[in-house]
Length: 287
Image 1 (cartoon, rainbow, N blue to C red):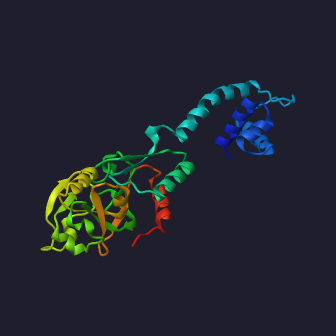
Image 2 (image 1 turned 120 degrees about the vertical axis):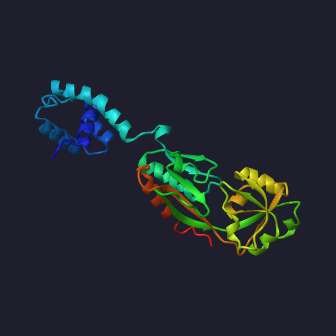
Image 3 (image 1 turned 30 degrees about the horizontal axis):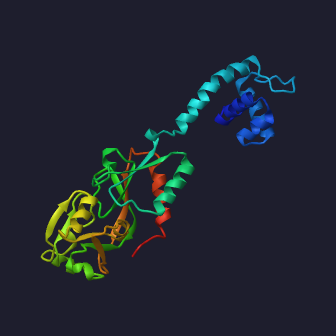
């Protein structure tokens, strides 16, 4: 048996508390366990660390020397093993429409279990910065074409809805068939959107009237009646606009919600975050 970190932590606590019971409570162990650990540490070092001829805890000269060194080294080691700065955070990127429900639960549980803070940030890019090293994992919607060296896992699927201006002739309708969208001009978000013309059969595709680079531009173009837009239901319902109405699409193709991350060389806790997200969404599948 070699010297282990709990031996050194126990000695440091005892040297600072100068009381076996208080030091044991601080370590979350019983007093006999702490006594055995201290005795074992002395055996492994080959020298006495405590004066046992007194009722109070007193350090020997060797004990004082060891304490002086450990009081500097142990805090630095703890900081290295459990970083808490923003620079060391686990970074979750998204392009638009961050989901609610399961991500917040996963993030809270991840922070508790790992001690690592999670930072969520938006970036209007196809892969939300995960391909540029600016995110450890990205939550993305749609059909993802990941480059070599990256992995994509689909967590669930969301329904689509159609956004129309309140000035549009469609505003009085409650629903529209997928094929009938082709009869209207379409507003596309070419960077982070989930809709493209290939989702309609060739020869029966909508006319593109406006191309936008982010969700906010897309929403304002629809509000200005430049065309209709197609969006996942959750995102549409969360972004209410006084000049935009939404129609259901009963036969629309569902939108996959994915996690994208590096296969190798990414954050060491990425597999754990992915597994927790998969477990949280395993019973949350939309038709």
